[in-house]
Image (tube, rainbow, N blue to C red; front, side, top):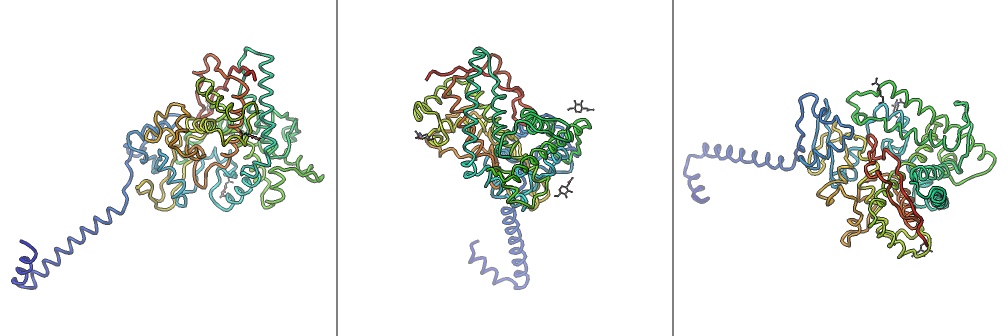
Length: 510
Ligand SMILES: *[C@@H]1O[C@H](CO)[C@@H](O)[C@H](O)[C@H]1NC(C)=O
Ligand SMILES: *[C@@H]1O[C@H](CO)[C@@H](O)[C@H](O)[C@H]1NC(C)=O
Ligand SMILES: *[C@@H]1O[C@H](CO)[C@@H](O)[C@H](O)[C@H]1NC(C)=O
């Protein structure tokens, strides 16, 4: 029956009953259509990892490195899935695409971070650019840290300190070879202490050989300062169990851990106080230096004493952390892979000839840049981003993410995404110098985050690491000490090497 027949029939049948029937039919059809449309429009929920009722997926997360568990789930459930932990719903993002979408495009819906008690202690209740909420305080202090320490122009003004740092490291390596030609050198010890000097100069204007700290009743040497301000605090951060990333577990570090953290924070506070007071005397006597303290005192008088201490400390710890982890892993990988080490040396030789590599030369050394980026990909300094809270309904990867849930970005998973990286477990800088690829951009690997909350120290880390690695390769040949290859455990939630890298270095005859 075609339409004309249907209409003719319609006209030949009693009017009212038919109109009603047709109206009802059309109405129903319309409803179904609309419902379908709405359904198509409204994105669905991502797959859920099956777990136990009530405790949800808690038992599956017992291992110390949850980012590995998350990556395993991703192989089965895709780049975005949800897990339930107690009463909370957590969306886990495991691929570059969805993570970038969350951190850049959907940023406004998901910026607040939850911190555990231990992390609150360590960060003085989020008084740090890296971890504060995205509010006015954050925007203001970020502007200061960029304009005075970590931004491109600020880094130009601090250039002289970096050059000195590299000369010192190379000199110390040569001294080691002269006095102990057959012994492996403790790479971390040299790199860390020189990096600490650099960060003190950027923060306070000068190196501090020693200082009397009244509350401790002791005079601390430069090494002891590094211990209190950097090493102890990093160790404290390592004590922070992964469970801290899930505050609703109501997991409280045991009493001894908590007391230890409190002690560490107290020592940090009194040492920073003493350092700042000493520099204030210098400023009062009319001597100004290009450093973060002088800048904050004159430009940010609204800061409380505690905020001032924490912001200065942040510059010290951040300079010392990512850069060290990345350089140490890069030298490990190069010492293990003599072919690529040789290839890198040839590249530098081709560009710089007999001259020492400088920062200006970096843009002409794509392989060196690839070595750096491949290292942060494989050994991401921060494998997970602290949880973020979703405060309004949003959409990621085509899925619906309701307000009230939480988001975890598995950076480690993003950087080992098999769809994005071929043989992701291999360290292979060659993959980043392929002709097809655009020049390596700082944020391609996600190791430094993305969007408004990307790591502000990434540029400095890149400058220091690349120039140092280049210079090390120019001046020495590098070999792993026997047994070093198995010696690569990482600590806790971080990708810090548990054992400092020991390498055999041999000067290269010019
Ligand atoms: C931490 O900061 C928040 C908001 O800035 C405040 O409400 C809270 O009381 C602070 N907690 C501590 C322990 O200082
Ligand atoms: C507390 O934690 C520390 C360090 O993780 C551990 O050595 C100690 O045994 C723990 N103590 C208790 C009572 O659980
Ligand atoms: C390397 O940098 C130095 C300045 O630091 C510059 O004089 C030299 O020309 C650069 N070399 C190349 C090949 O660009």
